[in-house]
Image (cartoon, rainbow over all chains, first blue to last red; front, side, top):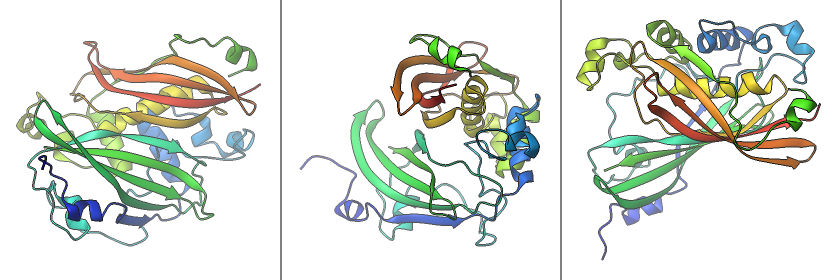
Length: 170
Length: 141
């Protein structure tokens, strides 16, 4: 049998939910501060802070920059315990099984598909799940690729974005 | 972007850059909005312990610079449909980080012009830091 780090138990939990978050309602100030931080030291676009201007655009009002994070500074679930360390087996532990026990992990990158824009007043829900495993031989040995999918929807069940992230372990 | 401007787009064109001199002023502001208070982004000693000469900036901030570059080029009515990148190099203190984009395909779909781009950030030594791709939709006039 070929060498693999993907156990039957790991294959069995593909599709499992890794986490779920709901935001507090997004405010104008959350959006304005995000934009000021991103564009510093230049001024952010008016679409992100000037409600009168934004009302005249095709958006009909203020919207958030696409990459805005509504889950910073606590979520509607209240304070969470800070994660201690970065256990490479965290994905599997979350799903109640043993992980592959690999020592090292790298962020393999992310890809996002965008839906509707986030706006003041929106409540966003994130549901993150395990999308799958693959592996291949690399420079550093047998590399395990774990993909997860994070789907954000708003209070009207419209998809805000879908993020596919890859974690590389070896 | 006006209809005339959209009709002048061509594969191989580079779009205007988005550039920032980076350091604690940028990273602290980003930490404050994203609640990303991690020693390696705040403290040179922590950056050095991780093998870099100084503290270094968040990959997520380069992610934002790539988005900001597309927004600056498209104007308020353009839409980012898809964006992906990898983080390959650390943004240490004092680096000039520049986001770039180059058009790789153009097509018409449902009254919009859909444009694929190769995107990346690099530093002032020309090292590519976050390479990726994006697809945007530009409305007609």
